[in-house]
Image 1 (cartoon, helix red, strand yellow):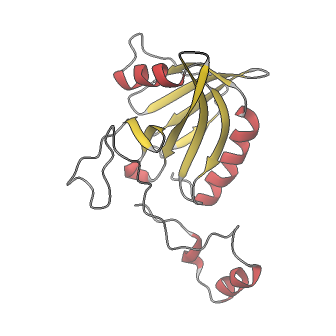
Image 2 (cartoon, rainbow, N blue to C red; image 1 turned 90 degrees about the vertical axis):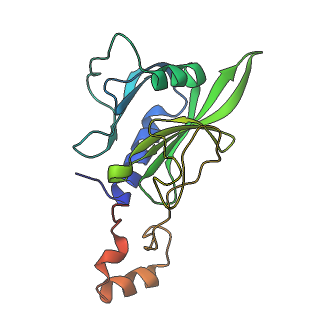
Length: 195
């Protein structure tokens, strides 16, 4: 089941509350379409992003899933760029089905650089991307020219977010506009369509 934007809004607030300021200790890929961040704050919590067939999920599992002995290349890349980084915040982007994990990642010389882990959670276009300065370091699914009419997602390119929905953002509009939309029975104005 795919969750809607309002569900991801609530989930991003919860995850931010639980994981902000924690350190990413280890990164795993339990399956080819899931990512597990082992985070240490006041306690150890696991953040699991699962893009599997049952619909995307980003949550804190009670028990971490089994992980393969040999991590895939994408997992190794994320370990190189994000391990030992501190989570600055987790937020939803543009009231869409996109979650962002902002991370201060260590670099040589006792410095940190800001990197971003993006979870795009929109049905068949689910993806996980790692960014620095708005450029794609790498992503789980590469989208080449001709595969998508709106954007490409390849290492080294500028990140282009999924097209924004033309629907109303119920938490950012005037109450009169919201009441009017409800009274005019525009129920689809608040439902995100699969892209």
